[in-house]
Image (cartoon, rainbow, N blue to C red; front, side, top):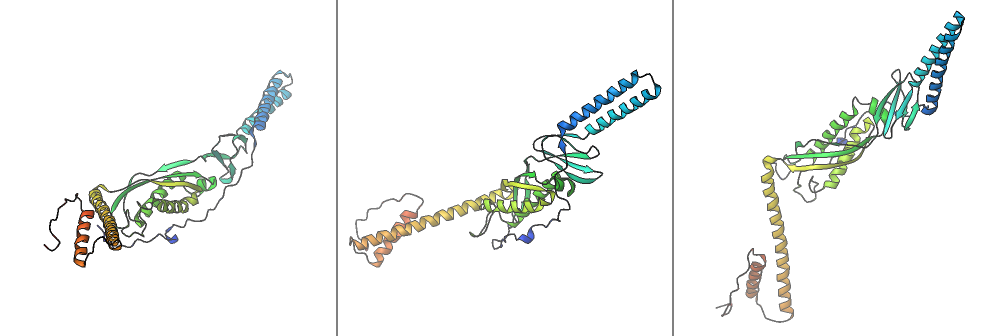
Length: 315
């Protein structure tokens, strides 16, 4: 076990990793209502079929071929135009690209139409949670501990999530684990000094620091951290029993200290009242005997056994 004189320092802002500035930001894509586009596309299909049917009834070979070709082209154009239709559900977005270039994001739910030549990638903007596995690390005092955390997050900038990192889901998972490990090694499980922060005794402060570090780590991916909490925190099994004994010893010492403080106060009050009310005159030897007897009675683990003294203090 590490020495109890180890000093635990609060993580400075320099410990938080600095991610590169984003090269692309989300902006709305140019789109129109899909209902009108669908209606025009269906009308184009109907017109194409009508032209083909009309061409089949015409007697002139040249006019017949022209009508059929025009009808086929109109139908193909209508089908191609309807390829630009997109159904966007609530809590989803479509990242639009034209020949590899980012053209914007569709966040309006419903049926929308964009340029059919573009590619549209679906990305969820719903609130998600990620729970890490139980990690085994050494705390600031070198004691092996186990801990796990859950992070609630959502995609805030779809362009950054799509283009700034390779896989934003894996990125969030990896950075969450890295942040949890970093926080764990910066603080002890239990602080030996009363003024020091500890993972067990200062859960709110440590959780806030975890959220700050997580935000700095995943901001490059356009991810917003809503909440982060430790779900598991314990000593590793190989030292759990020894640490439990230490905690029990600390609790016993604290209880004994409280009992002694209370007993001294009661003895002091008793002597003061005896003196003020002139009930009995006590010299220094009798006061010492009374203090000794009262402290034994008040601080003892077992009930005191009364003894009747038939003589005097000096016999």
